[in-house]
Length: 231
Image (cartoon, rainbow, N blue to C red):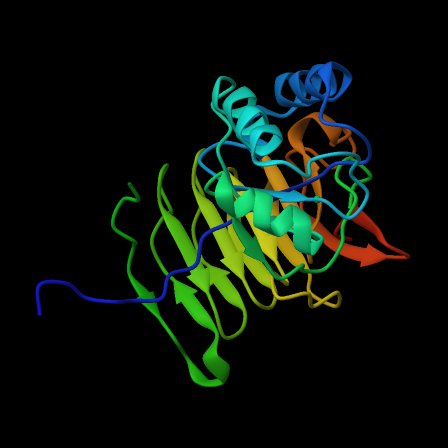
């Protein structure tokens, strides 16, 4: 065979349009990317159309894709689209995806390098025993992820379950990625660019001095991402 077919996990950012994809929308998007540039870095973009206005013609989707591309944001598909929107999006080169768990970004709460040495003990927990460096992505797709070292800026930890970091946590950490709202993140020093549980996130700009560079745990409570020092 001249090719291989393999499944692969990628982190996608869902952008929910709550109105028209007009100049006001683009200005708000520009403000968000200035505030949290790491949120969109190297992540495919999915447009959630459940509350959108317009976007029923191929030309509208093509123009929006061009506007996003000029900002180095690259839409790959849409979700929660009507049949007409799906057809127009497909004509513009965007796929229609099944909608995932809804999240509200900003409330607190939404070429990889070789991976370091890993092992999977009983219970499908993944154990990483070496530092996770910039550009590396570790994905525990069947349970918890334990890192007994530090995580560098630009690295990414992803787990279906909990994430434990026995060192400084920089880069991104996303737990409960399949919608597990009981997942938690624990670390010895919180210095992350982005932290998320079941789609609810906070960026470094949202973190207060009470938790930065502290031993903390992150968890969900009443649809909010809470970060508290460990006692």
